[in-house]
Length: 311
Ligand SMILES: Nc1ncnc2c1ncn2[C@@H]1O[C@H](COP(=O)(O)OP(=O)(O)OP(=O)(O)O)[C@@H](O)[C@H]1O
Image (cartoon, rainbow, N blue to C red; front, side, top):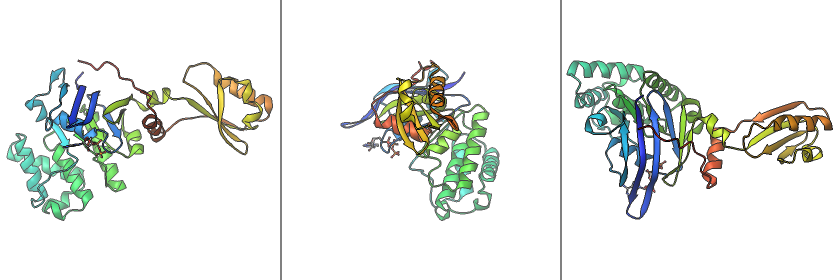
């Protein structure tokens, strides 16, 4: 199956190591979210994929072959710095970009009409870019990434500054593209959105990929926590030596067990709690991506699938 593969990418700007041995892949038809603090290296990696920036070492492959100019022309890219011509009309801009990618004038016009319609900016076709709101400029930018029906989508913070309706429109387009078999890589600081939209997530910290996998996989690498609403855990937790108390408020205690082994410890906990009194609620707490992210970036642990990327 086709996959966009980044393998062992390294990049320094002078003394600053922006990427350290970064390996990641985006399979055909999947959406991968790229998250990390400001300056972690996301844009640098995406620019290298696009070929607008060269890596010091490492390789980007598509379909098992190094990405060359012909493949790069098949990528739909939304750069962080945007880069539309401010004084050009929306329609002219999109037709021009589609023509640059080799479409005939008629196909370019049809693609422009299709994407401005889908993205809700059909009424803005005659406006100059600089007269559009930031969110509408972003919709045009996405249209610009899509007008040539790319085989791969690489989008640098496509959701920043969008209103909730525009977020829904953008999410729908990314889902449709993935469903049509396009690998989609995008960066974002909106972790709830990433959690909702992505098949896999890569977390980058000072140039290194510190976690990569589906949200469920990332959860499995973390410690497990349960909420117990019943007798205060202080009175029964000693019966389960591997557990510790995280917090408690009134009758509600949060208890934690290290690791994710399928060891039946949940039943031990429940039995111990029941032995001490009535239990009204007993539930596994599932960390959100935001919690996983905080945990991963605040520790040095490398919690990563880091599966051998396919050739
Ligand atoms: N052209 C450049 N010259 C020198 N340093 C650069 C250049 N571009 C990026 N950097 C530095 O490289 C590091 C990685 O930057 P990059 O833009 O890739 O991060 P990012 O994860 O995309 O950040 P953000 O979330 O803020 O967009 C940062 O320390 C940044 O200051």
